[in-house]
Image 1 (cartoon, rainbow, N blue to C red):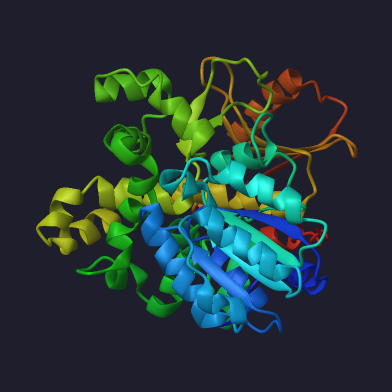
Image 2: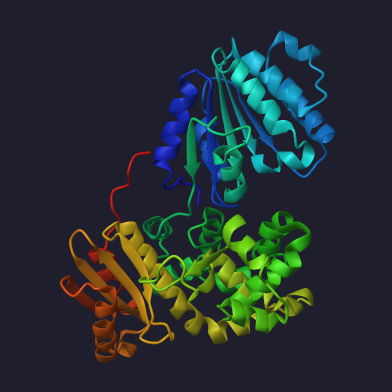
Length: 451
């Protein structure tokens, strides 16, 4: 998959910002594998001014300084570089800001939130240097981070040294369903069943879509095998971020993936308290999200939990749960489990996909599911437009023959009363893989807003 999809607005603004030759600080936040590095490469690979890319790996400050100093010496043709002997990350930034007074330059710092591991005073140092040089510098500094909560704290919370120092702040999201379909059409791989499979295995994350594009016809057999990157991906994405707490967090994620979706159910399944760990997964890492009925108030205790990322839902359900088989190389066992359970599992994922299609259509201001206090009268999808006074109630099934219109209609009568939308126009529909094409036509993606 060589073509660059989506991100046109971000790409344009990055190039435009660098071309202005003034001091600008851009912040890019997005989960690992979402395509931040690829976007940066696309934006700056052909710009005329020097471009430096620093990756904050888990090294000591001295090791990072040596690595970055060598990179500067190799890429900048400037007399003073020959005598540049930095001792700290502060020295690196100060030298580049001084250089940028007379030489426009773009500097990217990737995994910016991890700098504190090497030097916890760096952010204060950067603030002081940025304030000192901003008026005369010609640097475009790009700070990239993969943990939204930490990056947001650094640039948006009171008492943080970098508060409001950013000129642009972007939250890079996975590719929307329409882009997944575009890639599949280009790869000549599109069908309703494949579309759902690509959603389950990628959730719109570009790196995973690349894996699927390479596997094409039979991704399960080609990706569930020895040395497959998919098998270790959950560990690679999460263990470093979670640190010493990763076992407890993995236990919770495994429980949710196995169908335990309320706090008491998770705690009972694990036989220990999760009061501290679960909120961290929700608020700090945004890997788990709270799900409530569409009519619930902010303080409701009727909360369910789900893994936010489709790929991680799949990975914890099928790979992590069967890690013993993976450890001894019995990949056929895992493939058999997937074949046995995939139809049921993907039927649930189909509901998520339909919600994302509705979200991308931008036709509604409220979107979710509905259930009463006892967990009854459940409706898969409720989409409401309060301006147009319009509501759509949807039941999602893999096959249309399993849709029961009478049962849904009875639940809608109750839901309409609870939602107090009796005077709205009400649409009731069953959706499935059988009528996916019609659904896509009825709810096409809206034109993307400019940033």
